[in-house]
Amino acid sequence: MIKQMTRAGATVLILVAALYPGVAAAHGGADLEVDPCVRWVGESAVHFSSYQPQYELKAQYCTDIPKTGETFLVVDLVDPTLRNVPVGLRIVKGNGSNEAEAQTVADWHPSHHPTGVVSGKTTLDEGLYRVIITAEGRNPSRYQYLLRVQMIDYQKLVSSVVVPLFGVLLCAWLGYKLVRSKWLRNRWAGVRS
Image 1 (cartoon, rainbow, N blue to C red):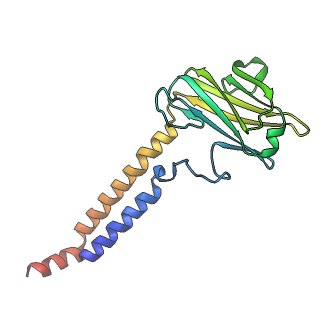
Image 2: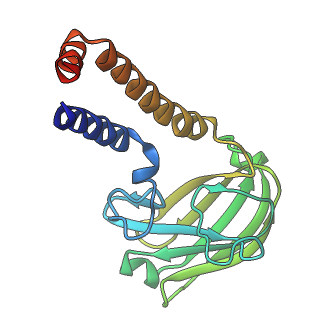
Image 3: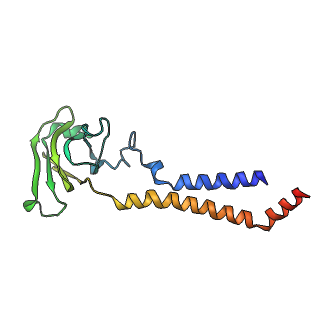
């Protein structure tokens, strides 16, 4: 009986761990193909990171920036050919498609970056922003990121609460079913006799 209860508990624990989204949320060491901070145009890729060391010294953000204020932006030119063409970075407020009317927050004009890193800092207020990275040359490329600054991501909030709650409810239901089962009552009655 104890062996079967242990097995059922372990199964439920594995199910809850597999469904919990926080397990796969880590960013470090991710493959480029699945890294949410990488954008591809054909075979060419860039990696975007942002930092706010005044709040957390080592924290790295991609598209969800937790606080407003001074933000350091870093674009790694993953494709070595991008290091030989002028690459620029522009940040506009809002996520609309009409770029001509968008408010430009920061603009680093295209230039060569032989080290493979485009970086700078700007001040971001609460809201949505688009980071537009352009690579000029024979085959011009354009990469975009949507930034959410100090905004609640309700989808992540719901998934981080609902999945563990579902696991607890499932464990409670299984425990209730096990306690109410005839098999357990018969085994328990046999132990007491």
